[in-house]
Amino acid sequence: MDVIVAGDRAELDVARTELGVGRLALVPTMGALHEGHRSLIRLAGEHADQVAVSIFVNPLQFAPNEDFSRYPRTFMDDLEVCQEEGVRLVFAPSADYMYRPDRQVSVSAGEMGAIVEGAFRPGHFDGVLTVVLKLFNLVRPDVAVFGRKDAQQLALIRRMAADLDLPVEILGAPTVREPDGLALSSRNRYLSAADRATALSLSTALNEGSSRATPPEVRQAAREVLDAAAHADPPLLLDYLALVEPATFTEIPDGHVGDAVLAVAARVGTTRLIDNVVVTFG
Ligand code: PAF
Image 1 (cartoon, rainbow, N blue to C red):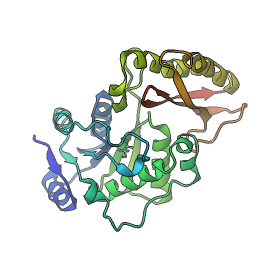
Image 2: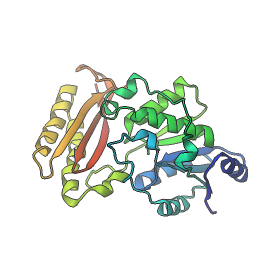
Image 3: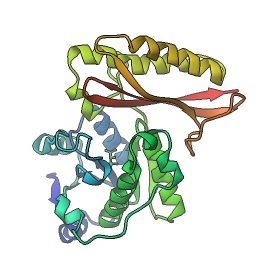
């Protein structure tokens, strides 16, 4: 069956009627779909009768110095991926439709949006939560699927759903990796061969860290890999390495028992990459 493409609320309403009743899953994306997105779509399909994908490069979540204008836009290829994966509805609004010039109200990610990743990208999570809430209101899914690679984003979306009583179930999907460990990302296409070799130290650091038994050992093992990569060519420029509580993203104490997220963000050449892994203590 062909994918229905909708660009506004009226077209979405027609599409919803065409799809009929049943549980609808939404996979929000910024396009440039890769194997990781395919895995989100497949997970969505296991939890709903129909899957919708939104494709929207959200200007609100990019700071002026970030890569909004060069973010890959591959709409026709994305449609093909959706078709292959059995997606029934693609919502691809314009920026003008999503953000009226006179708009006033937006979502605040609160203190949790200003730590770890948020400390390096002020306002980023406000922009993410605002667009995700708008997508939920427009598409009205029963369930929505997000990647665990963006672990703080996922935690904040869960938090928004709980704090604002949103009638949508939030699911996290495992990170998909290249055979050598590099986490899939739409931004990987910016990496040269040399950048890519340096970028591998992110997943290596997470692997080294997560094989240790206590929080101080985890931090130290991961940091040693990242320190070595700082002398590579091109060098890895570390933004942060954090070992945090999964739901709040606050730093865990040394005696922590239970799950923690070991998260890293770094720049290689002109590309900024993030990755994380869950570590269980005790
Ligand atoms: O993870 C992403 O691709 C984006 O942050 C999202 C959730 C689609 C919001 O623009």
